[in-house]
Image 1 (cartoon, rainbow, N blue to C red):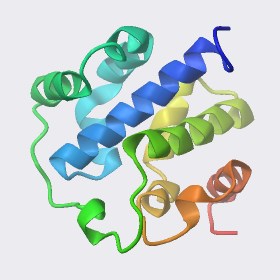
Image 2 (image 1 turned 120 degrees about the horizontal axis):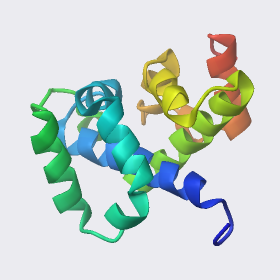
Image 3 (image 1 turned 45 degrees about the vertical axis):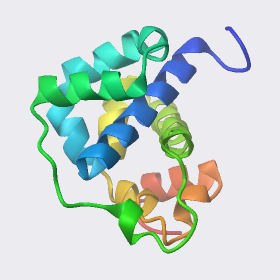
Image 4 (image 1 turned 60 degrees about the vertical axis):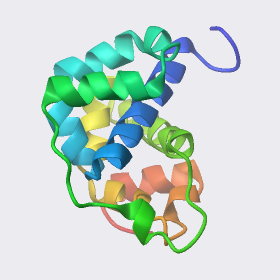
Length: 151
């Protein structure tokens, strides 16, 4: 462990933050970005996060947008936001915590938990910056996912 958390937790944080960054740049839903990147690229990002984290995030995101042939969409939760907009790092942390919780509770690999998180109804709730859900307590977000409904 380096720092305050295990290195792989920090790698997951970067992976989720990059997904968020790419989604914002391409105006796509987060699940669309995850699907376009695919499991192999997401595993690569997760495995090499410490390297990618040292590079310019615009260059890293451009490379993955190009490799995945991700087209621009029309989902713009930034433009729709009426209040303060969380950073891609803020949202990366929300997803990291959710994914680690799913992995632990369901006893599944982190990357499988990532796909479950981004394909759940909870992802739409997190991405609505006009609600307070994304800054709710991490355990409440996890319980909402596990229960399959809002608390």
